Amino acid sequence: MATILKPHERLVCVGQTAARAPDGSFLPAVPLYRIDDVGEAGAGECDRKAVLTVGESGLYDDIAAVFGGKFKQYIDGVEAAGGTV
Image (cartoon, rainbow, N blue to C red; front, top):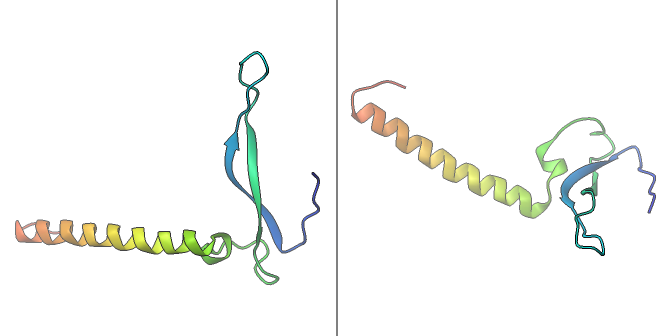
C-alpha cells in the first residue's frame, strides 16, 4: 500500500520480516516501517521524545536509571580502592 507522507512525518524502520516460499525456502527479508509524526516545527530534527512511543520513552528512562546506578557503583568502588575516575 502506497502512502504519501506529510512534511512532518517520517518512516522509522522497526524490524524485518521474512516469509517462506511454498517449497519451504526463505523469501527475501522485507523491512517493516511505522510512520512517526515529528511535529510541524520538528521536521528534520531528531528529538528522542518525538520518535519514541510512550512505552519506548519510559523504557529509555528506566534503563538509563539502571545504567546510571551501575556507573555510580563503579565510580564509588574505584574511589574506595584509592583510584580516580
